[in-house]
Image 1 (cartoon, one colour):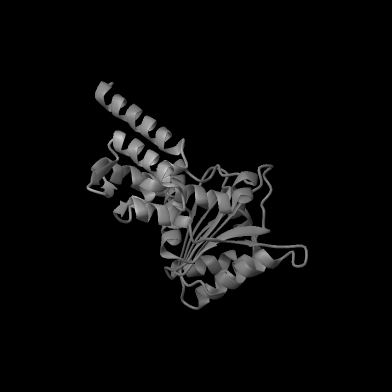
Image 2 (cartoon, one colour):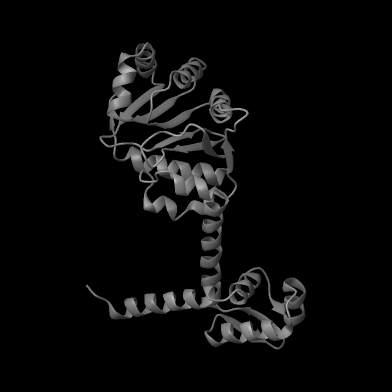
Length: 271
């Protein structure tokens, strides 16, 4: 049912965000106040801007009820607290895309749900591992090194890689577990390979679960206790093994687990 009041509130929120982002000064002031109350001298020292510019921005924020003034000190209003929190999240999201701009622009992201992009700020501490002209296998070698010390593994596997499977089996022999999501093509290659019988044996021991989806997978995702890695496909459909995003922090691993879950819920168990 159409709710006129909700629509009006959303429109007003949009106008507020547009108003904030149309200025360099206004969001800076709002973000500073999210950490502490300020007076004019403190603003001037922090921003190295003239008083007139700062006061103009403060008056604009006060006019739309985002800040309060008590004597000479400024603080956030309740509405200002909510807006500053939203701004912080927005800037963190934009930062994640900016530091690895080419990675996101040059690859297919169709296998990453829109919901996951709402929380990309969780990837803020990621690093970008990339091969170079002096070491074309640098990225893949780094990944295999990480995988060999992985422990329990959750993997979305869109391609068949022998070196990758050999390390997985070594980990399983050391008592680790594997939860694997793949597609029909990779599953068919697995069944024809020398590795499948071992995977079946480990499945009988409760160490391996293999699930499949009925659509193309365009992400290569690995999640372990201490890291997550994400590789993507080029937009022309070729897998890019020359680079991946690596995150070794709880926030990044949490983001990856949510992404993994979104595909897990669409999969069926086959082993």
